[in-house]
Amino acid sequence: MKKIKFFCFAVALLFLFANPSFAEHLERASSSCHLTTLDGEPTYDLQELKGKVVYMDFWASWCPPCIKSFPFLNQLEQDLKDEGLHVVGINLDEKVTDAQAFLAKNPVDFSIVADPSKQCAQVFELMAMPTSYLIDRNGNIRHVHQGFRSGESEELRALITQLLKE
Image (cartoon, rainbow, N blue to C red; front, side, top):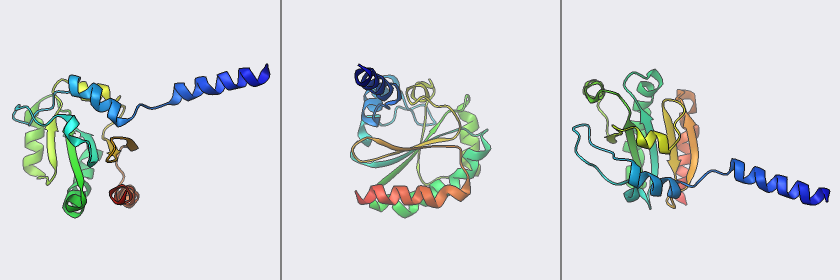
């Protein structure tokens, strides 16, 4: 009887701590995330990211660690784009003009989209800024990174390089 109780407890814990795959997030996100350009034009559907290694970064212009991450994200895009990496920054500013002003001073080489309704942030259960998701070609979230500390950039680059080889 103790073994059955333990087994049931273990299964319950498994379900409690199981994370849905990015593919499931993509399915939910495609219907609720309405990403736009900073000019308000509709942009690509998240389903279009399947088959690519994606570094998805939620950011805002008022977030100091977000600002510090941009040179790293630019370098990733420059160095690994030809190997199959797609870097996308999802802006969560209340006013799009704040993001536009920030980007005028800090140009980027990677894709920038806006989440005006904040639905993507809800789907991905965003808890901190910035939060980045490293997604493999099968659509599985392989790494979630909250905040940005420049000392961790080599570790993140190694994870990305590993996924690009898979």
